Length: 86
Image (cartoon, rainbow, N blue to C red; front, side):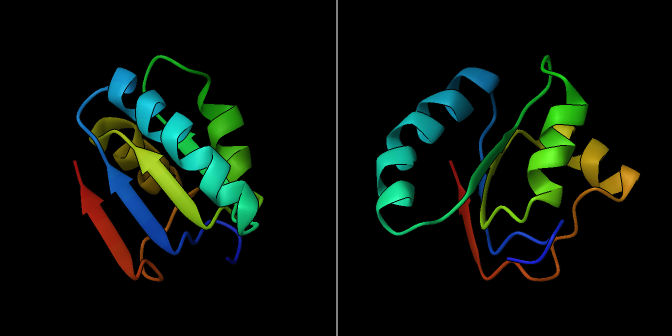
């Protein structure tokens, strides 16, 4: 993925569910060499923005933090081909 442009988005309602989804996806992502980024409120936004700048292919996000990152220009969804609403 290009910096700030993930290819897949998993949108979840809570930080706890985002962590569970990330934990479940991590072994699969590692095996096929995909980078995951988890973006949720209550955690440092700078670290999350950095993960997006690094070119994460899959983003697991809560709506509020995703909107914050989009508003800051740290994330663009124009390359997302797969979206999962959980």
